Length: 321
Length: 258
Ligand SMILES: Cc1cc2nc3c(=O)[nH]c(=O)nc-3n(C[C@H](O)[C@H](O)[C@H](O)COP(=O)(O)OP(=O)(O)OC[C@H]3O[C@@H](n4cnc5c(N)ncnc54)[C@H](O)[C@@H]3O)c2cc1C
Image 1: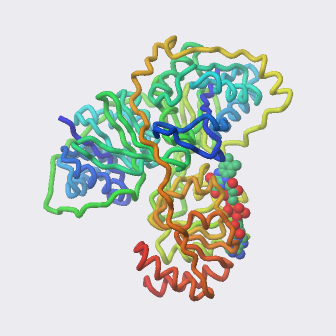
Image 2: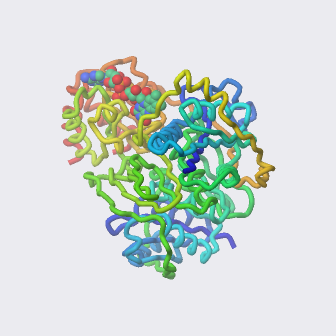
């Protein structure tokens, strides 16, 4: 019998929104749904998965799993897959999942597609689409053979169903045989930002060379604070050393798909567009009416960002607070 | 020391894309092919090691239609790599079989001390092949690497993850590293390099010879679509105050995203 397993990432004691989206989608499939939660607190987190439709949860509480280690994670996930007999695995297209699941797909001989933007079920079979060639087109995905199908979805693409607080399920703890590890995670250096990562953010405010100098990113941070947004950047400003590479959006940076993307002083070079045209609503603020970003924008403001952004921040603050 | 660098040829981002009439794929007659940008970092890293260890042999491996893929391999050779291996394969072999073919080609050639790749190919962004090659070779991997150092057969790498956090990872023994931007600055091929590349050894293999059956693909792309026509951009006029309040109104009432 076909069934779905959802790999649930979590942060600060809650399942991430991407995981809730996938649990909601899986429930809509009509197939039995199990969750896979790894790391300290997994058993408690499994309860959240039950409220979103999982009837079983594979968990691994071991503190060895507090930080991601590809070898350890692969061994426990392989166990969960075998144990569940799942034919479909869903996970967010996160840094962790994109590192882990290809290895696993190769191990179990399954098919994998990452960076997917559409997922629906028809008669228990997943219908998936993903962008190709930096978003210049999209393609449907055809899985061949009877092996495991692994689908990594971009966050913020699917609706989250209402939780049912009365629902519970069965917890299946997984233990890991001791392994001779060749990979050691020496240290995890936490980033300064407490905000959602660009790849998960619902709203992004991005700045380009039009900001003139590093210090002026403060303008965007203020705007982002009011909106609860994450700040991104073009490559031009990353290369100038104003902001770290982790903030770069585009072909050689991050691919983002927020509900709202505000591009400030960004011209809209094709390599930048490659990373953000999946955004639902795009606002462009630029003093050059000919800037290519305006062709991709939903709303455009031609003007000097140093005048527009402070007023706009005030305006948002007025209505949002 | 044997270093293998797996590379892929991809359409240049600037290339205008047209679909085949039946939407089964892209029309590749007018495409300009380049080496996948992330693979350039992988080649450069191998060449940096070769500078420190002149006896190291750097081999470029690529799977794809031979007639075009050899150009990308020659680019790697012109940058300074020693040898090339091309595995002739049909267009759009899936990631699973591509990884199998690369691993088989490497195994058949020698015992790798290090395998380098780009973190992903910018055509389908799947990021599967690197870890697949590592799995089929039975070596550990680390992906999205922007810093790397070597000491006594151990490699220490830095991987940037969400929220600007960084993982510092140590790998013991042979391993696969997938390069991110920032790892180094890839060199350009020099003119003498390009001349020399023509005489460097290039081994030609095919899938059948590696025991790989193209019918065993796991994933195929179908029903390609160009993005839907975007509605025209709404330009907001007026003074700064009017522009701002109108934008906030549109986002709340029209787009309903706030
Ligand atoms: C292989 C490759 C990969 C690349 N990858 C990426 C990538 O991942 N991401 C990326 O972003 N780029 C990437 N690029 C670079 C890209 O081609 C552009 O150079 C870059 O995006 C430009 O950044 P920008 O828009 O900030 O700067 P510019 O193009 O210089 O644009 C600045 C804009 O600011 C506007 N401006 C100036 N002053 C003001 C003001 N006071 N008020 C309002 N507007 C103002 C100007 O009108 C202009 O439109 C890549 C390039 C290559 C070759």
